[in-house]
Length: 262
Image (cartoon, rainbow, N blue to C red; front, side, top):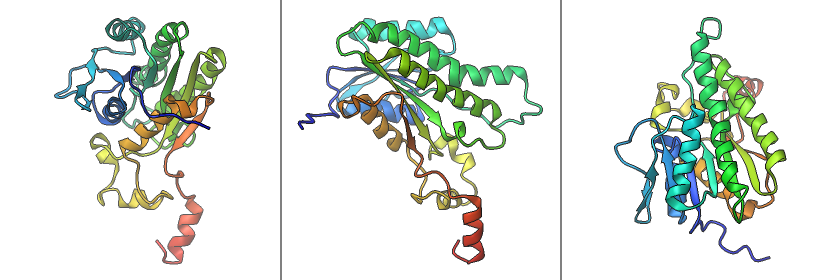
C-alpha cells in the first residue's frame, strides 16, 4: 500500500472559521505548514494572522451567523484561490449561563453561532466542492458537551448535539463528493479558557483525564489534518474523540480518594 504524502496539502485551499485566534489559529497554522493556502475569518481583524512556512493566512472578515455573510466568505475564498478543498467549522463557544434565567436572545445567539453558522458555511462550501475535481472535506469542531453536558451549558450543549447530528446527516447526503466529519473536543488549554482551570492551574482537571493532561490546540489541529487528508479518504460521518479518553467516572475517583490514591 502506497500512502504517498497524506499530510501534504500543497495546492489545496482551506477555510477555517474563527481562525484568527485560539484553536482556530492553530488549525490554520497547521494547514499552512502542510502547504495549503488558508483563508480565515473573524468578526474583527486580529493583531497578527496565522503564518507558517513563509506564508500567511488570508483574512476575510465575516459574521458566519449571517447566511449571506457565510456565502460571501466562501465566494471570497474561491475568488482568491480558484477552489475550496477543506472547510473547518471551528467558530463557536459560549459563556456559562443559568438555564432557568437565561434570556431568549442569549439562547438564540448561542444556537446561531454553534449550529446554524456551521450549517450556513457548509451549504456554501458544498456548492463549490460538489462540482469540482476531487470534491472536498468538511470538519466540524464539536464538544464533549454534546455527549456529556455540564451545568451552565444547556444552550451550548444542545447546539453542539445538533452539530453532531448535522454532521451525520450531511455525510449521508453529500457523499461521495464531499466528506463530512466531526471532532469531539474536551477541555482545551487556551488563554481564553484559563478561567475554568481552577486555582491550581489545571492540575485537578488533568487528574481526571486518562491522558493526565488537558488537550492543547495542536491536538485538535492534528486531527483536522488527518480527517481532511488522504488517510481518511473513506472516513465519512465519523465522530473523532479528541478528549484524552474523557473523564474518569465519579465513583472511580471517589474510591481512589478513599484509598488515598488521589
